[in-house]
Image (cartoon, rainbow, N blue to C red; front, side, top):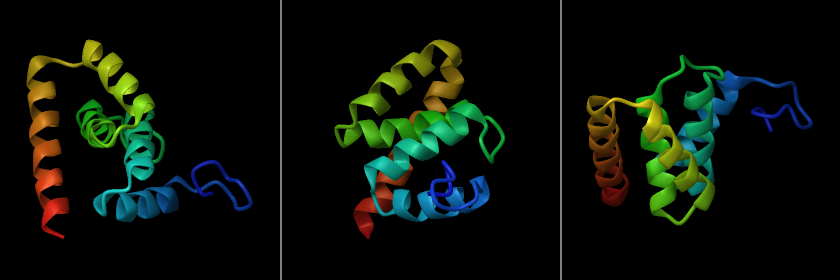
Length: 99
């Protein structure tokens, strides 16, 4: 809702809050949407490492669009950025599995 402004005024900060809560609980669509926000810089500074992390987590749950976006994002990232995105993905996955 807040991301697109569907039925409410568009508010990326609120979208970020709600997507973050859901994504940390393992919700693949919220993870994908966070990836989009970080990739495009919507409501957050553009950050390919964070975008990679969220796309990767969503892709691991079978989200094909997240996989496609993650794979195309690789072309824009350095090897150090990719390694950092993978590390952040692993850490997030471990946190979610503990819940």
